[in-house]
Amino acid sequence: MLNFSEEEKKARAIISRKKWVKNHRKEVSEYQRKWQNTHRARQREYRKKYYAKYPWLRTLNHIKSRCTNKNNRYCKRGIKCFITPDEIKSLWFRDKAYLLQKASIDRKDADKNYTLDNCCYIEFKINSGKKRTRNQYSALTENRGG
Image 1 (cartoon, rainbow, N blue to C red):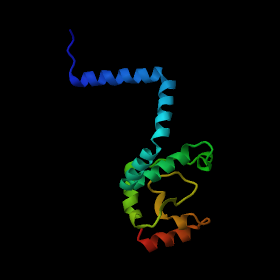
Image 2 (cartoon, one colour; image 1 turned 30 degrees about the horizontal axis):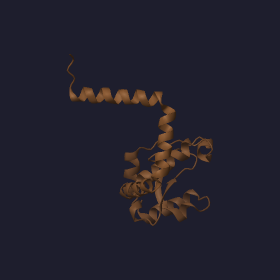
Image 3 (spheres, helix red, strand yellow; image 1 turned 90 degrees about the vertical axis):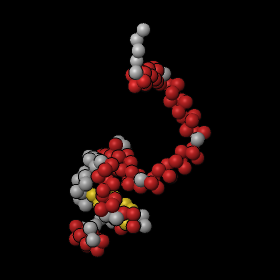
Image 4 (cartoon, one colour; image 1 turned 60 degrees about the horizontal axis):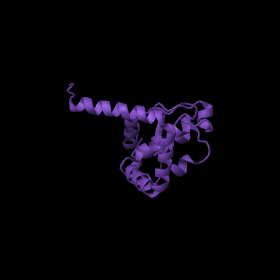
């Protein structure tokens, strides 16, 4: 008889579970859909707590959805997300986004991708305004010490 360690048993169980899920995809997706419909409030509450603890990840998720959704203008223009969770976190603290009323990510050059060098956090009201020139952007960052 073969003796497996606990780690090997867990690994085998995970592989077995993954195979089952792969072979029963319709059943799994139907179960997930039903669960999500019956637990919306719980999911919303969990998400609220999670984003309160890690607010920069909300920004990252929005960036990723903009860049991967084929119908979004960012994706159509070829804008890509090259910023990592650690980089977005450092950006959050570098730009003191926690002090802003409603923090919004801004790309310094609108034609370039989301990268650490091309992004900064600014007030939503300012970011939602019309196109800004580079001089207006410089004035914004100088006033905040960025």
